[in-house]
Each structure stands twice: as C-alpha cells, then as structure tokens.
Image (cartoon, rainbow over all chains, first blue to last red):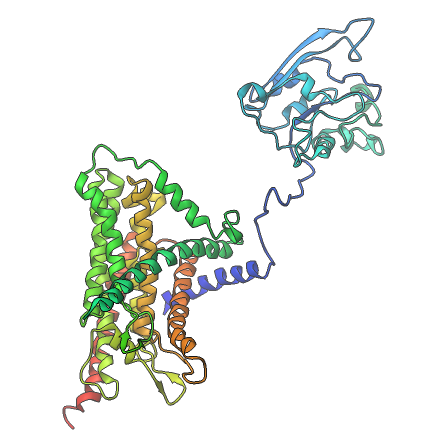
Length: 209
Length: 360
C-alpha cells in the first residue's frame, strides 16, 4: 500500500498544480512579444553614455571602465580637451568609446567603476545584429543626444520601446553613496539617463571628516 | 464474399491506420499541453490556434532533416528497427473493437480491423515484438549508449511481459462467468460483449470491478511496455542521451516516436477494452436518432481511452524515473507475485462458482 499511497501523494501535487494552471491562478509563461514582463528596477540593459545638464559629456576618458570590465569588451581612448571648445569638464574626454556587445556580460562593473557616472545602463535589452561589426557599438551609438534622448538602433521598429532607453538601471542608485547619514536628502544619482538635477558628489575629505 | 466485402475489409484496415496517425498527431500535442499544465506553463502556442499544428510542423521538419547514419551501424537491422517499432503498434490496434457492429442493408459491419479468436494472445505477441525494435536498434547502432538502452529494454520487457500476461489470464477466465456462455474467450470482440449489462441495475458489468488488482497490474505493466516515464529507462535522456534511438535522426527517429505514441493510445484502448467495458455504455437506442446511437459506443470507448491516456501523461508529469534495481524489484517482487496470487485467488473463486465446491 505504501507504493500506491506515495504515488497518490505525488499525483495530488501535480494535479493541484494543473487545476491552478487551468483556473488561471498560476502561470509562469509570458507570451513574450505579445505581452511584456515588468523589468526589475536594477535590470542591466544596454549602456548609455551620459551628459551633464549643460550638454557636456561626462566621460573623461580615464579608462577605468575598460580596466574593470571582466569581459574586456570596452575600448576607450582618451584625448586632451581642446582648450577653446572642451567636450567634457576637466582635462580629457573619451575620444573613442566602443563596447563589443558580443562579449559584454552586462555585469555593470563599468558602471560601478565610473567616477563621473558617465556610463550607466538602461532597460533596453532587445538589440540584435546580423553581423559581428554591428555588435561593436561606437561612441555615436552610445552617447545620448544633447536633448537627453538616446539613439535607438531600430527607431522605426513597431516593437521598439524608446522609453526603455530613458530608464537608468537602479545600480547607479545602489552604488551611490547615499547610504551615509550626511547624504540624507542629497540626490546623488538620477533616475533617467537624461540631464538631471542632482548635487555634485562631495570630496572624500568632506565625507570622512 | 464479393467486391464490396473486400472493400469493407480494406476500409477497416486503412481506417485504423488513419485513425492511429490522426490520434498520434493529436496526442503528441495533447501531451505537451497537458504536461505544460502540470508545470504551470502554456506549452506550444504559436503553430495554429493553441499550437494544434505544432505536431504537423515537427513532423514535416523531421521529414526534411538529414538522416545521419553513423559508420559503425549494422545496416540491415539499423534500417529495420524503426519499422519494428511501428508495425506491432499498428497490429495491436487492428484487434481492438472500436465500436458496436452495425448493419447497412444486409451487411454487418464490425468496427474492428480483424477479429482473431485468439486476439489477446496475438496482442501479447505483438507487444513482445515491439521490444525487438528497442533491442535491435540499440545493438545495430554500434555505439555504447544505445546498446545500454537496448540491454535495459530486454530485461524490462521480460519482467513486465510476464506480469502483463498473468494479469490477463484472469480477464479470460472471468469472461466465462457471463450468463449464457460456454467457456472463456480470447477474442476481444467477445470480451467486450461479455461486459455488457449491469449488476443490480446500476453498476456497469465491467471487468475492472471484480478484477481491480489485475487492472492495476496490467496498467503498470502497460506503462512499462510502452517505455513511458517512470519506466523510460531505455531512453533515459540524462543517463543515455536518448538510449536506443541516440544514433537515429530525421524520419527514422520520428518512427520510434510514432510507435511510442501509437503504443500509448493502443495500450489505453486495450485497457479500456479489457477492463472498462470497451464500447459499452448507454446508447439510448430508440430514444436518440439511429446514427447517434450508432456512434455513441465509439464515443464511450474514446472517452475511456482518453481518461487512461490522461493518466499516462499525469504519471509522466509526476513520477521520477525508477532506478534500475527498483524497476526490477517492482517487476519481480511485487507485480509478478501479486499477479500470481491474484490468478490463484480468482481461479479458485471462479472455479467454485462454475463447478461448485469439490466437497459439495
């Protein structure tokens, strides 16, 4: 009787799950192109290179992102800012910035490494390419426009959701130093990749004193 | 016997063939949907409404795939094995009475491919033949995983064939107790006819009610005979990468699948025929139009069959695969002694009822 009893126990479990599926109480499948799942706040999508509210590029060409990248998919070459027409505040700017998305593992270590929040991640993950060259995104494709919008690969695609590029992933927020008590009420990150309103980060001496 | 009789026989055989192909297409889809339901998934949704055309799409894909033949195969046996898997499955289905015989004009038409008077023995023989497909495919593939699958198939088939045969003996003996008949019968049409009527006016006179242990043993053995989970050690994807059909691809591989799914359906139909009264059921003759009353028995058989097919899928979605020693223990230590005990018991009871107590 033990065998049949155990069998019945198992059948009850699966049968119960079946009833829950049929009555619509539980369903794991989302019919992907027809319906979309809500992405988590810290979703890691395609990168974007940010600008300051005045239109200056944030990237200073320090190559820390390239150094942090475990997949070695970022290539940065910095150049000195032209004194009469600076691209970024400070001495240097990212002259060449390329990410190979065939290698990128979307770990966001580059976002953590970036001292100026120049590189952040968006919620866009639907980008496909038909040859390997297209997988290397250049600075023109990654950098946001001065008005705060981000170039999309397929802007004409009916399925393309341009707003996904406007949502910064919450990882920036998680790594921002707002955990310290003295930062309470000070916004150290921005929710969108566009030019936002946030205080500059105080220097380390200021914070530790 | 004139031309029309020959035509009718041909139609019966072709009809069974067409029915099995059609039912297999539906069953593969149904299994994927039902198992998906058990796992809170949707299953195939894209090909046709609710993915109903998915099986057709898969079948066409398999037809056009390249069939790779490895170098080490034993050519003749390798090519014959898929047919050995399918043909016995068809032969079993030919014996099952799919509905109540009806008359058109002066001809009586039986909805059965062929009524052999030793039909039950023929079916046992055929289901044993199906094991050769597993064994020969495993051996002829010339590589180790299929061979292991084939060896497992041999032992499993021998163990469960015995239990299955022993369980069936009580059905044959019990058919002798039907009022107004002389002796038992091996003919499936007659076994069905001897389950007609009721006990006490409301309990259907199905074999399952007096013979429930035989039913349980037979159904477990049927699952094992069709190599379905939890008895799918011969294919065991995780251990044997597909078992006996590892080296098969394309349409030859599809033939094994076709055989397996036909076997599920025919084994369920056979269980329904032997234990659940076959096509017996209320037909309301005279109340309903004649053609509805004529179709209803077939509908009843299909309802019973699909309840059993659903149990096949349910068990597959529930139980993990048996370990090899567990398989052998269940077969030899539980099912066969159980079947023998049940056989002795039912022999004694039926003997007393037929001939009276020897001391009386």
